[in-house]
Image 1 (cartoon, one colour):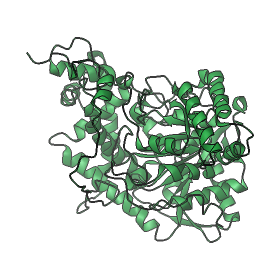
Image 2: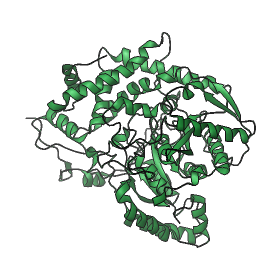
Image 3: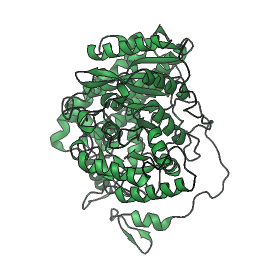
Image 4: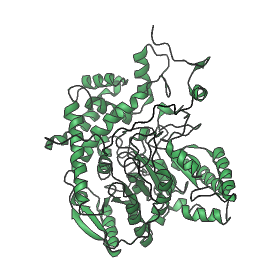
Length: 95
Length: 484
């Protein structure tokens, strides 16, 4: 299975990942090699095999709907890249 | 002091031979003198370590010391540590100071362990050589030309070079066991769900598991006693009693049935590795164990299956790194899409990008069934093989890695060749089983690891099996010449 440069650019867009134009050829080659490896799966008959999403058969646990976390706003403010008057600042990205 | 095991160090602390402060200072001095070449630590937390050591000494004088009180430990930089940089080996998190502790950190702190620092690793744990780290490659203490393995390469090198008595690692496809093998130490990946993943930066959530990296099975057992256990903050952490993992270490191996999968002994393994493994198996026969030929017919599918499942989960997990809330942010974004794309494009390294792209592709419309569902079906086949095997045998053995440590740069241009370094370890993660690597000799003067795979939640047994071998052999006591 080989990808072409257009497909790699399309996947990169889906993943919101900028790839430098000069690197596209190398990504195309490496990703195609990885897909060749993955392709070995197609030799196996998996008809009727139940997909295994997880190693343990677990049911999602539920807990009482009560407050369990303390408010640590001040701690988080200290770690944020930019804050003002208790607010978290992000770059202006919507006109 | 630096050649003592955890149990010996605890005895030394107990009888007043040295204090935790002196012990901690001795390790900090070694790191300062010797880690320049190795690059096994990203961050050394000297001041905090000495404070914690003094607290541990007080706890001991008050007669309240446990088996790990005052023992130094190196933490893999994938575990969030409050107030300390937690980079996950990535430029993306180079500026990230965690506001909270991972459960593993919290538990080991509570046990009185003294964190020396945060160890180097492949970026976001994606790699088998520790060469994908933003902070540079880690060197193998046995030969500075060689890689230490990965992704827990910093923890492995630090323990092998006696720059920490024990360390933590994480294992998604072999990231504890393979570096343990390549650096001649003992590493244990517990059963999926045995140790909490809370605060452990996620790579592939259905595969990731934390475990100890140590110089002996006994030390690994002592660490696991404190690391394992239920945590309501990790919804996949299993609510199951934690046994004392040191209790059965001395059980006899008489009558133990060891399964040898014929697929692990087929072509692909270096002859030097194979002769060490065969010698180890002979040793087990001398200890009273019985060797049983078994087959894991679908194990050949492990690497292809893993390279769909793991990247698919990674592409979802790593979507949180968007340049908005924390981590790296690009300069002067033109709009929201530019902010996302450039922050991620500039913040992630090449291997992480490859895996995000493969994952995004496998999950995209039109390919989901052919890749993701197909991989989950193959995963079931691989897992069923193990279940069948455990009807006949108690543990499964084979090599941890197909070759000894390769040279730095040798595989960096060929990702698929690099992925095959984990050919024997990946199936264990897909099934969710516990696995260990223990030192079993040398080939070309580089260490060889023997892999011991157990049934679900059978950590006590594989630790016993490893300990009995270590009682009868000296491979685990060997130290690299420059770090003795």
